[in-house]
Length: 101
Image 1: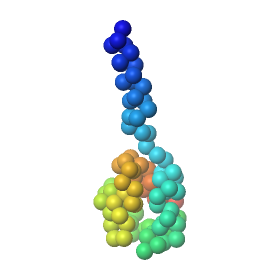
Image 2: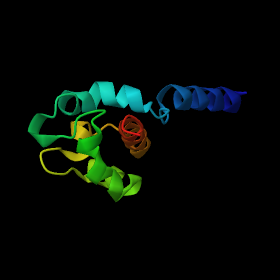
Image 3: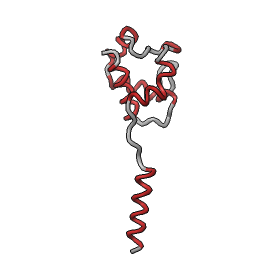
């Protein structure tokens, strides 16, 4: 009987503290990216501005994701939020690209 209680406790802890679901691109953008990309701070391509994003979009999604994960120019790795997962970053990049298509 003790085993089932321990197993139940382990499952409850995993559910409570296990891997979090990826955030939506819009959530990540609003919480992390908008600080710079809404206005173009430090040369950041502005959200929804096709001219700003055209040369970056040509690089492709994977290259953009890699740039965000590693950081580029004035942008720190993961936009300054080290807690973001790679899935969160991908969702944010998709959100930014969708705004210029």
